Length: 510
Ligand code: ADP
Ligand code: ASP
Ligand code: MG
Image (cartoon, rainbow, N blue to C red):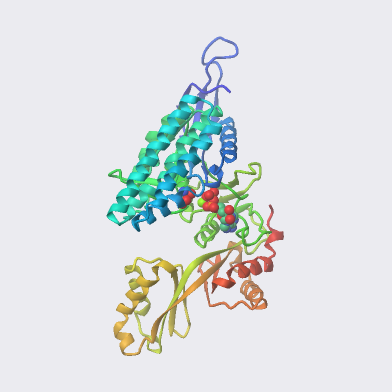
């Protein structure tokens, strides 16, 4: 393939005038000149997509093909599957005084990455350089864990340095594999690109400096025909301190970079063929949704569809960037296209998701009736405890307010509420603050549910038949989502029953 020599930005930022070197007629270096729109795509590969030698090989083929389509390609990679868990567990064990896990992890992770390099990188010099890089990263991991062990404490800041190491091993490896496959590639640490606040563990990107850094660092590579291979999941504060974007955050990294560079498309390459009508591990006959709206995809992701990190949609919506979810192991499958206005289908409900590990907190008492400000005080106390509310449901008699939080926030929330309502509890206006653990929110999502009668009847009919008790219900005002609370033990069956009631295995085109 002939590579463009010079790239002149034309009127729209990415309509370029390509000047090809070496003309077929031999008259001039610049004889073959034509206008062409260059498509810029961000391709993100998840943990399983870089989980084995075979998977790396697949990724190389996908990237090479994308380059042949004359696109500007930016690759974002996750850590190899299981690596982030290993790093985090080892660091936590170190904080508890257990040295064995981090020592073992150091050896295992070195072997894991070297094995891929050994099988896929032909060039001995390249392989040796990678080996040194792996060793130095993993030595620093060992040193970090040693200090965690000595201090007996793992701070969120320290954990971010440790948990981000997996991507910093995978990106140089993937770049080298791409080079072996003839794709000019260079790995880039996202700490140089994504500027975040210092909310360690779930850092938020700062738009303006991120766009500035990403453009300055990546555009020259792209113009030179080089594919940047960027570490997913990680970023850094303005002061250069390492942060992470939250578990599963590499999807978000791809969308952040897509927005920063005003890309045309973000592709999420994973181990399933797109966003399905339900998690295929729970509903084996779940089917691919061909097109879905940003809002629907965001609702599904928020309510537990792990295939997309919940924050991924936001940067894309703001710039109207399409997101495509594709299968690394079935690259010709069209997958799912996430856009503002998907083509209409016959489906009312589009998909069902479930989010586990939750607690429902109820503040109840007859004294709450008609007393203004109880709801405001309740949620102010929850916010002070630093917890996120996933769903709210209030009985029309105003005698109780129920809301759902993550199980790990429960102790802080209950304590904050009991403190806030101490007077009302003492005077028996509020009977108690009750926490019901082990619950699951099941969310039925679909924009066409709005204004379609009989949706609730179908859902509750299906659950009633299966004798599944619905603990609480909430419907968003957008009517794009109906959420139900059920007990943990009922959740999977509830998802299957609702999926069957809407015949989602049949109606969606796959
Ligand atoms: P990656 O490592 O590529 O980021 P993840 O494990 O984070 O992949 O996400 C993909 C997984 O999401 C799938 O293997 C699937 O089990 C799960 N999943 C949950 N809900 C859905 C859904 N509605 N559609 C597709 N996959 C889903
Ligand atoms: N490696 C990180 C995680 O396991 C980020 C990601 O895979 O998206 O959470
Ligand atoms: Mg993921």
